[in-house]
Length: 191
Image (cartoon, rainbow, N blue to C red; front, side, top):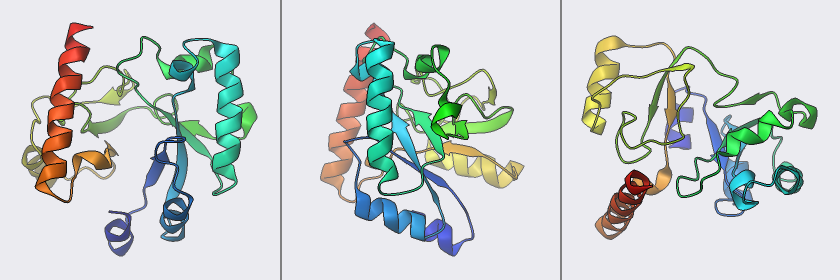
């Protein structure tokens, strides 16, 4: 995807979770294609809501990320099975003091937003990957719905949150993640 976007002159930000998707070689390749690399943090969930432990983890993980790439923006991970919202860390602390220029859900306003969270392009299965500052389009269930909408409306800027595990290379991978998403969506609705 990063290579395709580069060929089309599209600049994106790719967020990496520590340690789950922390892959220095891939991070450098994406950076070298002209994209931004950011930190996809989930420290409040990891620290079970303890802000002091969370900020310590944040500094530690951010430091590891910055050994690979210049990290200027962050984006909270929704952690749907945790009762803690990672973005709440910034009710106690200020990310700006860590030389961070923005947080993807707190620093962007009035933008057209789409996410594949919950295996749908609307926010029907989405608990935390959303903001009151974003604009949503209801009823976009499939990728073809999203493509049709973009081709019809031709927005100049859109915010897409995409999770690569949903875009599998094989049918076995596809069904594995499909079944996993169904299970997680069921648990989210129960909780």
